[in-house]
Length: 353
Ligand SMILES: NC(=O)c1ccc[n+]([C@@H]2O[C@H](COP(=O)([O-])OP(=O)(O)OC[C@H]3O[C@@H](n4cnc5c(N)ncnc54)[C@H](OP(=O)(O)O)[C@@H]3O)[C@@H](O)[C@H]2O)c1
Image 1 (tube, rainbow, N blue to C red):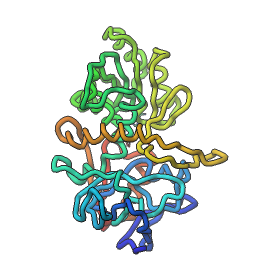
Image 2: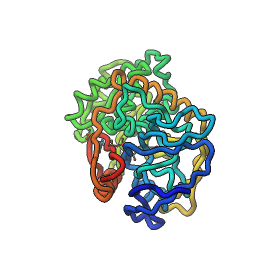
Image 3: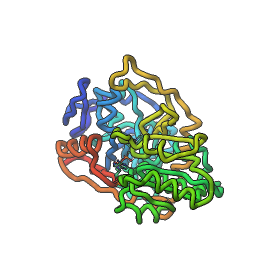
Image 4: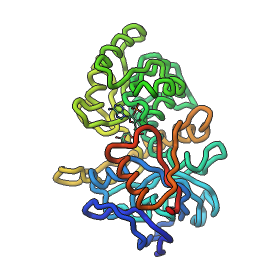
């Protein structure tokens, strides 16, 4: 057991967030890497998993880029390697897995070596959103991996495509061979999304958006939308998933949503290698998410293509580095999980100031 050397962002059993400097780590798992965090990546899940899924009494954060301080004997990694990846989630998650702290532990198989084409700050922003998009495209939609692309001409819809999950999904679709990628986003994002592979762009807030999509599908003449992803997961009325359902006239279409697995939707998941429990707000009991290792490793293969081709065939167009106090970082993280910070990814330079 060792004392973390500086401040960590903690959530207690009552879902109160705070800055702590008394966090101890258990070093007892032989397949784990001990890592000095260089950047911790921010996701809505960092706060939402505590408030909505019961993952509490832990240090928050999943994404990271760091330097290996200690690798177990027989490891594929060496001390000093610069790596990135993400850490497991579950009820009872140990504090050592939280990434918003200067040192963490991570199972070796959730980590990749950061290549020279990928900066450390971008590496820290990538794994959660790209793995979620990869699960949607390569597992739920069952489209080919970028290493074996095939022409697919039926229209596919990504709703909320300028979310970070959506940005990754559009690029995976392009790399998979999809010819007709329909997206909704704010008009300010349309040119960017076209440059990343979108072929038909619509404003999600337009009162005519559903009809506009239907008219474009008709004009294209490649049949109905066969696959659609709600990549933003709003809970407005109507929700973004409701808008997907309204826009897809084909009852045989495969529908996915980042926050929903009922009413005909399947939910992509960032990490399903191992099973885990969560306790959704209002549910009488925790629910079990079963392990699906084959699904995980297929998404990981697509993700590793993105890492290898980062900067040329795949990118996150906006990654902001926050360099400040732990207290200020915590406020930004809570904002991301609440009303949002708008377009782009946020990563936090570690250690906090
Ligand atoms: N299931 C999983 O394992 C998993 C993993 C990761 C994330 N998620 C979930 O996926 C969602 C997206 O996460 P993220 O980190 O990618 O989000 P993000 O990058 O923070 O998304 C920001 C973008 O959302 C878009 N947006 C906001 N309101 C919208 C609306 N009403 N309709 C369409 N787009 C809207 C905005 O697009 P414009 O700029 O175009 O307005 C904004 O740029 C979240 O709900 C998150 O919790 C789930």
